[in-house]
Length: 243
Image (cartoon, rainbow, N blue to C red; front, top):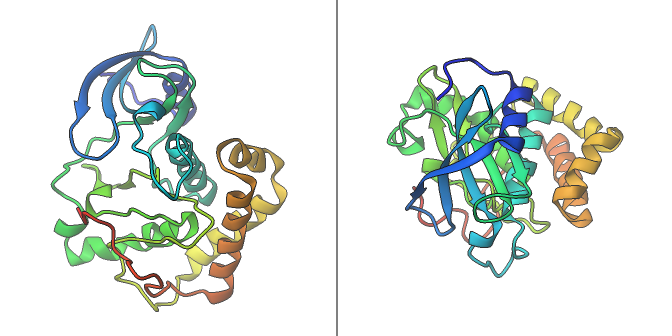
């Protein structure tokens, strides 16, 4: 892989336009997911490719939309300024057709939420709030990872942004707590972008339904009004499996 540290825009361009070579398939998970190399004439990076045709149909999410939701989660992470989701794009072509392409992050897959120390778990408030905003229906413990430099990454966001409340997560550590002021400030700035930034609005509408985008705005309003991490409010608040 490349030994050069690339800028975000360079990574996004490479993910969007680079030549794809499949290295292998991840065997866990219900959808087809591939480890790939993405190459330009100068650079090569590792990425995770999730073709839309490999998505297992779900009764409550429109078929073939999970890849777009992965990209919408990345856009949300960037708009909030939290850098939680690795760079992710929607490829219109690929070895198995259109799908999401996400930068592969170097992390120990055995070091996740269920093996984090108490101190490390205290750093997860942005992840917990992010999941509220995107309405994450599948925050497993193994979907929160830490790179060698200590950066926390959240992955696997294909089941997000439904207009009905579907928050299922293992991270209920902060239920009923007041959301820290800095996270509220970031959320308020994000809310203004949702209302006023036409470029951002178009990005969401290209990936989600109008109703799902409008509900994202309403969820953000609800967070700003309540200023607390929610309690479990659905019958099944945990994903399955939990890791």
